[in-house]
Length: 122
Figure 1 (cartoon, rainbow, N blue to C red):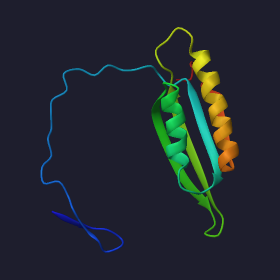
Figure 2 (figure 1 turned 90 degrees about the horizontal axis):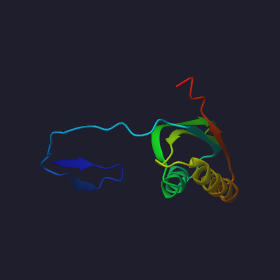
Figure 3 (figure 1 turned 120 degrees about the vertical axis):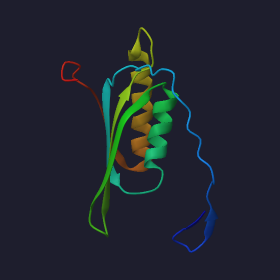
């Protein structure tokens, strides 16, 4: 099967798909924090944020993005709900991740907000 890309290059697609039964699904930790990122749209926002979250041991449980603004001034919005690693003290992980996210925001000229979710609302 061949698929056409926007630059008119032909790419071969895999010819087989494998489906395997899942023995069991364990539900991991629930989301504990919501992360929002706002700023001028540019490459690498999702990658950079996801890399920081993964390095801190967190898992993304929900991710939403939206591009708003005008054609001349696009604004990118990223919202992630994240779950902490399984540990007795997630505070250490949150603090380390928050510092890295602040640096990412400054380096990439985006606004980054990390807030704890109200566990009763979940």
